[in-house]
Length: 354
Image (cartoon, rainbow, N blue to C red; front, top):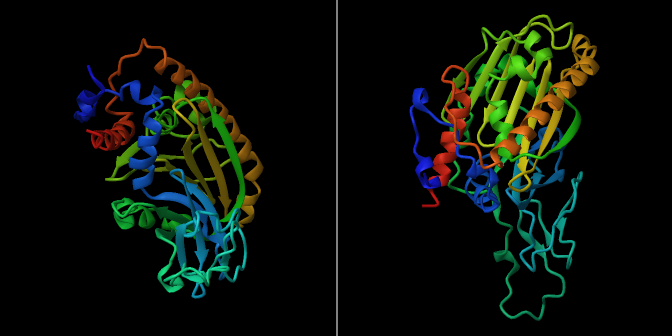
């Protein structure tokens, strides 16, 4: 069966997993950067880093350099971090309170809104009109204390992608949480392997003995929306690790996770590094409530344990996918609907290549 035949979307009760070839071919990376990451909303910053005029954050989004800048009125604008002269960078790191953007190559200067203010020594350039030169804009949205960007105008509307999430998690108080730390992991697996693993609780009893005691596997459920999915479970027996309440695990296509427990948000950003490697960034945010701060250390140690277990199994799965012995297996309709949902969105993207 050719890869093209695996673009076909099957009903959940008859569904097979994605073909191994999508996880092991180097040529897929450029395609995914353009058609998957380049046409989706990507987590780029935390609003706390963009509070005052001139505050700016640089990021690599789908292989493209971008810069997000707080404007004089407090709004956010984003641009490609590329000077219109000869492609030099306007900033090489995050910064605070800039009054303008100065190209690090030849000194061209831009206003915070992207218009060209000055071009050094260009007085002899016939017909040169600096008022006609502006940095190309990138879509940007601040939401729940997080900042997202989208490179392509064909990206689905933000409100459509995140529909219903804000209302559902309002009680968690995400905008009031403060950034605590970032952990970065390098994995020897394709980025999709890590996300497939995140999207199902089927492996909990076998891979995560500690987490299985905290989550109620019998009540563990998955809900599907157009561009995101939610796994949730009541918390129990957690010895002060998470507190009382529920665990919500949101996935926003194609590579963002929002892991929410009482008083804590953990965001995951999964970034491809070739066919057999990826990077996963974990950012931790907490409320200032004393009962939450008292359990931060235990919660982060528990998270490290879970992540070590996930890394080990994902790297083994990548080896299996690359072995040449694997045929796409059947999915469990009860436990793997989130995997089915994600892989069908990918199939729709892959089908665009013809």
